[in-house]
Image (cartoon, rainbow, N blue to C red; front, side):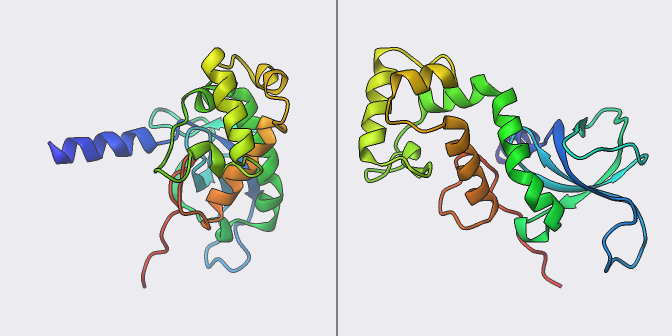
Length: 196
């Protein structure tokens, strides 16, 4: 029973689609083999990945299929990455890619605001979003109790203190990807470096 739950959990963590952060036609400069690589961020759990493309027609910001089925642009997913192992180009592209993913999955992230709950007796998961303190938290909870939020625009209208929800979520995802967080509410915990 334990094993099937773990394999189910792993399946849930698999990304189907990703956004291209960087494309290196000759690979990394310090790499022994000169093979093209692409750095990606998954759409479901913001997983950072490195892959080998099938052809050079890959563009930064492009959304591509990386699931288990027949992939038209990716030959092989090489590994999960940590934030520090991203190229500078990928790091620069990351905030835009995260915001794009959040905007294109608006319902999922609005539902996050509608269903977020306390993590323990001291802290609510919404308080982990940069800029959300007790005052903001109470305003969000009161507004969603009256009626669940329908969109980011609805949220901004009904909670006057709330900054741009997309920016709040993007900043939180970046913080989690950098591995400096105690709680991971929007991403998978970062990949652990492999011992030599």
